[in-house]
Image (cartoon, rainbow, N blue to C red):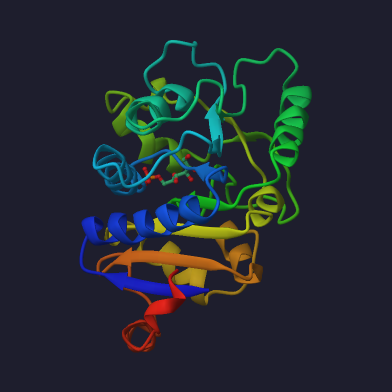
Length: 261
Ligand code: F6R
């Protein structure tokens, strides 16, 4: 796991944008994994700017989102299918139908989860997965207590996650759904490269646990310690509780340029 401490979210967006652009240069039909929430927005802004400048194309790429609320109607602005369309995929040149997400409106939820796993597999798996992290250490919506071997399934959101996300629902906790569909931890672990972004002091404990805690279902992101290629991009505030922060800084400063992310 590589920890990179950067000055601000623009620098995070730029470095993650470099990684996505380099991937699409060598593999135009790459499969991207997309997170929603606020953390990846600088990455999406950076990629949209590169697209506008003619520096990257998503025309042959495909994408899978991580998760979806259960029960929000199809037109709800906070439905993740609508959020990712607005924040990213409609701003670049993905082909219609090339971006998929779990179906939170399915009548047969287990069948919808199974078919989502099959769709990711049929696409050849995710080449680069963008992740955020919750204040409670969740990735996608794998809340504390999630099986480290979990696949796409229905989960109940913790009260903390619903409080954290109430800002997207008029600060009204009652409007935040209680359930979601989410890729499992084992699903995410199959991505070939994982780029996790975190900013702000409220992520500092989760980032510390992710990189330096014991692997445990209590902090689901710690499963990433078992992944061979994870890049964690954080600002100074999110790095605030890292015990080895100086070592990570020295390592990144000495990193050969050819290595990329
Ligand atoms: C959303 C997702 C979540 C978020 C996490 C952090 O698709 O996968 O794990 O990444 O809740 O959310 P933000 O970035 O809004 O702090």
